[in-house]
Amino acid sequence: MRARRLRASLKGWGGVATMAVVCALVAVFALCVPLSGPGIGDGRAVTQASQATIEKAEEDCEAPEKQTLSPSSADGDTIRAIKDREGEKRKLIVGVDQNSYRWGYRNPNSGKTAELEGFDIDLVHRIAEDILGDPDAVQFKAIPTDQRIPAIQDGRVDMVVRTMTINCARIADVAFSAPYFKTGQQVLAPKSSPVKGYDDTLANRRICTAAGSTAYSTLEADQKDGKLPATTDISTTVPNQLDCLVRLQLGEVDAVVTDGALAASQAAQDPTVQLKGDAFTAEYYGVAMKKDADDLVRRVNQILVDYRKDTANGWQASYDKWLSATLGKDAKKSEPPAPQYLRST
Image 1 (cartoon, rainbow, N blue to C red):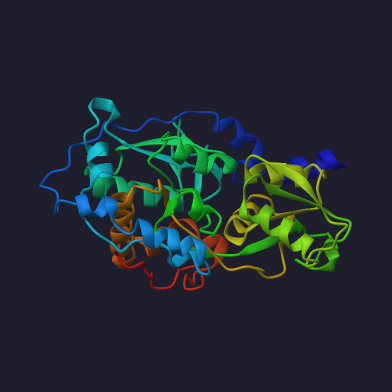
Image 2 (image 1 turned 30 degrees about the vertical axis):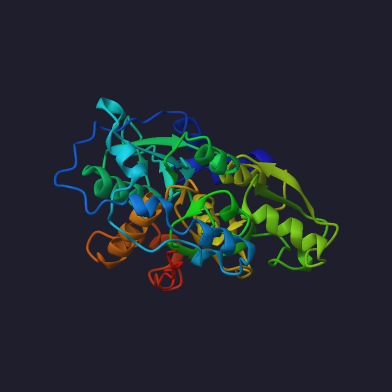
């Protein structure tokens, strides 16, 4: 019975099993083209600005999505170091997901190379085009959820664009851009399940979350505070969100808790599951970078300003292409508010 259900759920788009195999491929993008034209401004002051302001903001963190730096097109030390890479190494190195349907995934139907596609991937190409003059001047690195911050801190990537929620704990370790997407935690469960949402129907149920995710930290805190039934088992954690869907299909857990935007994509992959109840948090995705990469943070924030204004090939066009089928044609509920920035010191 369980095997039949699993086989049925893997039909259609290509299936989780197919996707898992394709995700093993490694994509390397074309050699980048030098950016034409001089840099704007010196940017040296940019790399030293606002550190004291940021540290103070961490202590008084109430709205983490506002703890970022104002936009600038200046080239500072971080950006110059990226531009100075030679030969095939002259690329933007970005940590992404490769198995989040419509966000960052390898489409098995796109050809032999199964190149990365999705909403996050579109943003990465836009950043690379602005900084290096070539949208394909990118080296993608698949990063598990719990390795996003270590990958940035260790210098393995220049940035992470991977449905990463901006929160108070994370801004102590990495710097974030302004928000580029609004979402919230939701429950995903089989359509036949008695689970109705994030409520008492989760009592005595097993929930799966990704290790190092906002979902897990929320469940842990809510259980301590009595907002989540004490009998709810939250011990199942996995490296990537797609693994939770597989666990659900195999009957090893009763529900998944993740960002509603990701849950909607998982429901699109498996017609036997659905979102249960409304989102019970309000969260924002941001591009994560090193704490001292002020010039890169400012540059990405400027890119985001321009990206949202570009109606033909920007944020809205990417939403329409990748997310409207799962989140609805009205993008307003997913579009973050006008960004607010820290003042420079």
